[in-house]
Length: 373
Ligand SMILES: *[C@@H]1O[C@H](CO)[C@@H](O)[C@H](O)[C@H]1NC(C)=O
Ligand SMILES: *[C@@H]1O[C@H](CO)[C@@H](O)[C@H](O)[C@H]1NC(C)=O
Ligand SMILES: *[C@@H]1O[C@H](CO)[C@@H](O)[C@H](O)[C@H]1NC(C)=O
Ligand SMILES: *[C@@H]1O[C@H](CO)[C@@H](O)[C@H](O)[C@H]1NC(C)=O
Picture 1 (cartoon, rainbow, N blue to C red):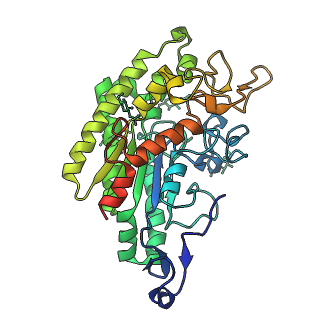
Picture 2: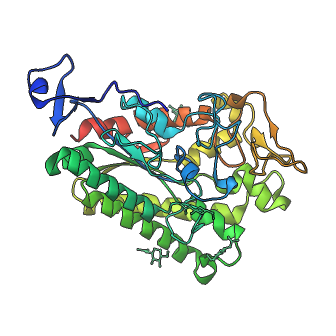
Picture 3: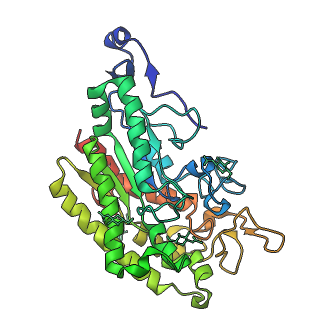
């Protein structure tokens, strides 16, 4: 794993005080560059760096087989793409090493941050219960980590670290996907609006908990156009080249509610600042006009089986259903049936950092970090 120690050095307080080449600030006995910002990550497979490698789950929710990782890591790191994910690029912009999965044995460098995300997870505990780390459990892990930080750094310094940190959150896709995969789920006891309110309500609960712990700078991804990804054709083959409208409708409701609730939270929570990335529009534009953005294929995945590679069996084909792999993932918007390629993530991470207003508002992450110390 990439856990370089460039930006992290433990030294005696007296040594820090005498000054090193780089301006540093010391939190307890740990000295960090003055501009040090930690990155904490919560959510689903869009940003999971491999926590599902360490839990009992099903193979379909793990990306621990070749060719996942082929373009960058050269081994399957647990990230559901051919290479780096959004948090990897954001970490790089923040001058941090890659943030490993929280459950990675031996990972304790929490001053850099931690990744709690779990592929397949939702904001609702019912979503794939028993197979994923749901958002609330991810927050409990965060609390566990915070206790360790407080022992190491002390109360005040931990608070400082947590208030300067960026909290990257991507959740919701799976809460909507499961409603079409399992006919006995919650959704059938609620209207679409009530179900969306529940997802957003649970997400809000966790945002408020993080805020209570000192978190101030949040970066959100809304839900991608899952009704139009290759996987939608596996759920509902008769749509052919079109999108699954009933799923799109739910996702649009969610995204609208998310934009709305973030504006409200900004007025309710002291010091709360956010960056909202419109993953939905970003992906939709590339599905519809891949050439404009430097891709060749927007509708079909690079890895999987089926005419759109809509089956989520990349690296896991069986004798009866072999998977196929494209020659060059960077020509594709999707690596497998549902997850974008590293190239698409790299494009989005740049827009999120710089704050391109077509895709990210009201701030880019760079401004979020710089503007509100
Ligand atoms: C995972 O499942 C195995 C077999 O069912 C069981 O023995 C083991 O205790 C489980 N591990 C966890 C962490 O739940
Ligand atoms: C379907 O959903 C119900 C209720 O959430 C759950 O108990 C059941 O295990 C799910 N079935 C499958 C196959 O996921
Ligand atoms: C959170 O989700 C549960 C179902 O898992 C629901 O009963 C509850 O009302 C939701 N909470 C909020 C604040 O919406
Ligand atoms: C933002 O959108 C406008 C209108 O579609 C387009 O002309 C412009 O190039 C976009 N900016 C970037 C940086 O993509």
